[in-house]
Amino acid sequence: MSKLDLVELTKTLVSNLVNDKDSVQINLIEEDKVKIIQVLVKEEDVASVIGKRGSIANAIRTLVQASAYINKLGSVRVNIDSL
Image (tube, rainbow, N blue to C red; front, side, top):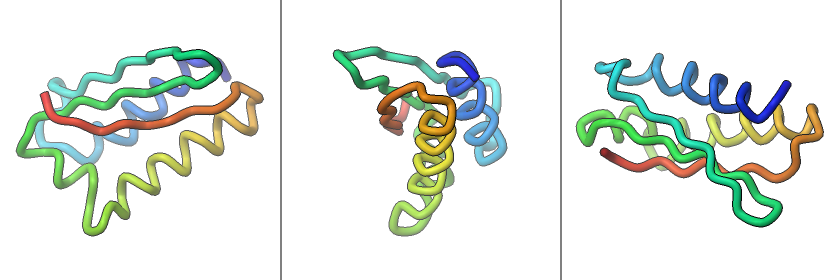
């Protein structure tokens, strides 16, 4: 699995949670040794991606970080924001 696959994994997870799948934007930002996956969705879809008390967002983070760890891709953070 590559860094690009982490982006695809994140896009697949997030796209299944939102109403407008085409508006989902996933960007990979590399800072020092940390990779940041920036998730941008429409404002009305943010609540669906974050979930109650952040439960869905935490699950997405866990899956992406576990995938990065298993594939020895280093540290990964997932940030969720609106367009």
